[in-house]
Image (cartoon, rainbow, N blue to C red; front, side, top):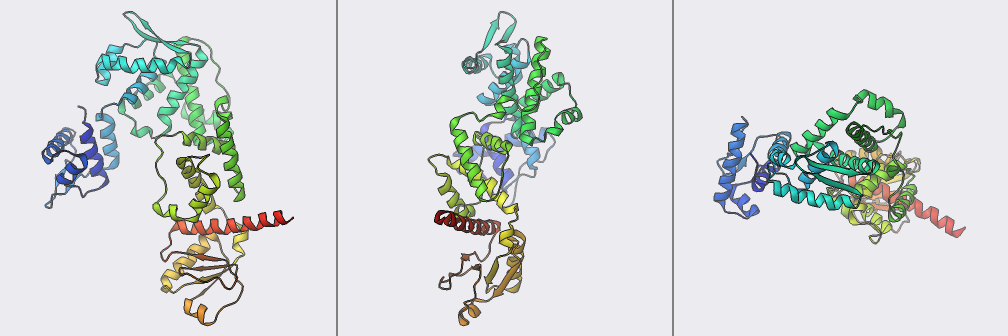
Amino acid sequence: MILKERCISILVSLSQKNNFTVNKLSEILKVDSRTIRYDIEEINNLLRKLNLEQIKRSEGGVLILNLSCEMINELLSKFIKLTSEDRKDYLKLKIFSTNLVNLTKEAEKLDVSRTTLKKDLSEIRKEFEFKKIYINDIPSKGIKIMGEEEDIIECLKYEIKKNIKKEFNQKPLKIKELIIEIFKKNYSLSFEEFLTEHLNQRYTGFIYTDIFSEDLAIEIRTNLTGLKIERKKGLSSENKKINSKLMEIKLIKIEELFREFEIELGKDVFYNLSDEFDNKNFEDIFTEKIFQMNFYKNICDVLKLSLFTQKEIKIICYVLYNKILLKEYEKLKLLKVLLISDELDIKTDILLNRLKNILKFETIEVIPSCMFNIFDIKKKFDLVISSQVLKNDFNNLIYQIGKFPLEEEFVDLKFFLLEKENSKKNGIKDNE
């Protein structure tokens, strides 16, 4: 049984919130309420067959689905209709890992017509021709991949990596089953042996995936062709180089930016960043609050949209944000800080603890705003923090913080101080 796209939308909606009614879903999906009721009945028929709890309606008409996200993902994986891209991914893996592929049998497995699969194959042929890989028809037997074995392995490695690198659990069941079948049939190393062979290289998780994809691609083709193909040690040439001059320029700019904040990034991090730039499924990773922070605005100015896309800037900000959050800066610890607060003691204590934990300030004096104004404090502080607007007529560095600050504002404050420090350094260099 294959779930319609509308049924999938209903399942996803109900898994995220439990305040949907039939009428609300009909508005969102732009169909009448009767159609939604039919769809819910179709979903419930499936849930009934699987002995799972069905969609219910509360007294107020709100639809309730008591299934975990894991269970819903499993349902979608099993009963969602494969898209054209999914079918092509499946076919590519099948063609690379099988000597002869029978299109009629594969069409039956995928629950589509042979004509549909032939259209998919036609698009794959065009894609492969650019890589000097060809698909030949063998009359009465099936289709077979042809080309230089090195090109085939490189292409197969890419297809494996693409399908396992991101959200493997959410892949359609047919693709997951095929990858696991290919792995069990061809891969000779156990998990412990794989780790032992590569552990001393200290690669990141991303690069381990690349190495595994290359290993598996070589094993598959070795078993199919009988040729002795040597496994490459360490990173492939593809991973050692940046694919384009533009990416090289971008990574130099990123490296300069990170060094300003005393953060060193290895080449593997740059590789992963460049790989993330190409990820079409990348979603927004910040709350709306971060876009109002100086941190985000200043990074946008530094990186410039003419060179980086908005998505690339968000990824860089995400990495830099967390690096700054976790890094301890000795120069910040020694700052003399004045906190002006009219909040309840409990709120002030929370604010103080967060300033000490995130920015590691050793000296923080706290006074209410009335005392600050009445005594007309002229004492020199390195930093004054307040939730109120202050006139900077006493030559102090001022940071206005929210009344209910979240983590983003503390990171923004850290960024603000580091930028001021960098400006001083640059000013000294210019004067010299």
